[in-house]
Length: 203
Image: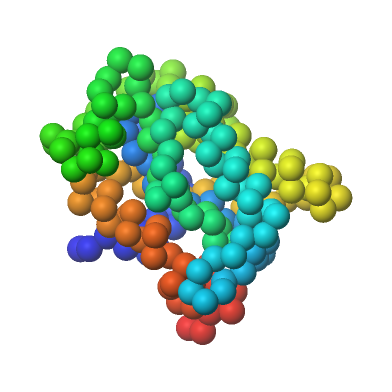
């Protein structure tokens, strides 16, 4: 079955006993509270972000500036009116993911060291909301918290929700999976009329 992120990755349940600090790529979707179109509007098949959308974009890439084990790329991220899609790369200090990413972008990479490791130590598994440093749930939570704080400061709504409680994630397994997801991210704006997150979409 072909990969369809819009259909296949709407589940908010993390894989039980999976170590989300494992080096590799993770496709993440985060949706606004009640699907409010908060970040801008579509214009001529493209997304025109507003002030809140610029905050979301800036905080996404600030994640990599604050965390040396995170790698993010502009062509693997998009802000939509009421959600974001992005790929988060976790780069282990002692593995070859960083070198691989540079080779992959040049088209000279060997087979990809994606998330092939089995679930690791139980101490690294986030459960009952307990943060695990370096894990995808903790990274996403920090991103949501930072954007919520800044947006609420501007609009004068302290304590208001900006995002849905959870988020959606898919563990990228291979190059073919990565390329399909990257294409999905890059073409997301031109498919807004059919996007299930679009509150004005015609069924």
